[in-house]
Amino acid sequence: MHRYILKRLLLVVPTMLSVIILVFTIMAVTPGDPGRMILGSSAPQSAVDALNREFGLHEPFLTRLGKYLWNVLTRFDFGESWRTRQSVFKEIKVRFPITLRLSVLAIMGQVLIGIPLGIIAAVKQYSTTDFFATVFAMMMGAVPGFWLGLMLMLLFGVKLALLPTAGLSTAAHYVLPVLTMALPGGSGLLKITRSTMLDCIRQDYVRTARAKGAAEKAVILHHALRNALLPIVTVVGMNFAFSLGGSVVIENVFSIPGIGAILVDSIKKKDVPQVMAIVIIFSVTYCLVMVLVDIVYALLDPRVKAQYAEAGKRKAKVKTA
Image 1 (cartoon, rainbow, N blue to C red):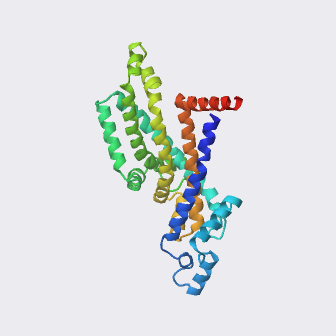
Image 2: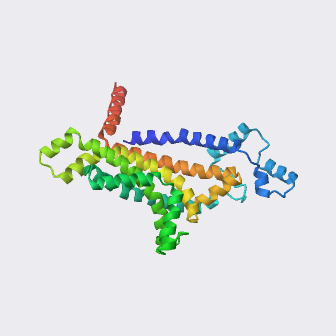
Image 3: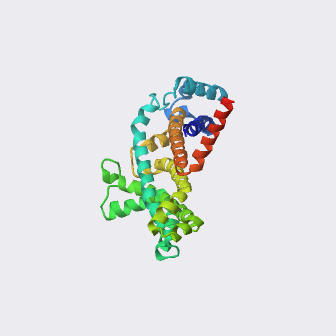
């Protein structure tokens, strides 16, 4: 099992290198003059040129990319923000926990909404419950997150005055943004849960369990659901990445002091070090979540553990021979 985990962790390294090179290239080719954006339109051109030279923008692209990779890999130095002239992690370490907490709560909401409704819809196929669950999934899957957030704000915040619409100072402030992120993601989880559960319910081992007199609840939860969890776990892991990215938009809608405002402002000002640091944090978090998904895979699917156990036995035989 430890070999399996180590192999998955090693895959994070080339993934992160690819992300760094890709994002650095995109920031380099996008139009815009960082010096002009930071100093403003009234600044003299000489001051703009001097600032751009200070940022190293006069050097060739490959030279700048090489220096950035060298500093990151050898000294773990991600540079200073071009806007604030402070470490890129100064604001990130304060705001990223807020974004992460919001994304984790959104994932929990998606799981609580999507998986139970998907199981019920599969067990009661073609029933009224199945119909309404399918309609709900289609509606929520088609609604843009920012529009849903605005509608929830108008209904529960303005018209009914039940919930706050901005900030995160109390637990009540989390309700609307978490719902905004959880409902669309939960609808997708509902559909995949229903589909995989229907496939598993029709399998021979489920019919055998019923024929042996097993209770219907035990058949659904212990036989069908366990085998249906593999694609569900994958979707949950992918949805977490979408929640991290989507939280940037939702934070701006609900005026949440997370990492979204920094990222949007940094992109507008073409603050390359700050954008790179935020994207790297997102990427590392996503990669670690996917490693966790792989570990859950191994726990749920005995074939994975058996595969690596057999490989270890073969290596041991080769060494002894």
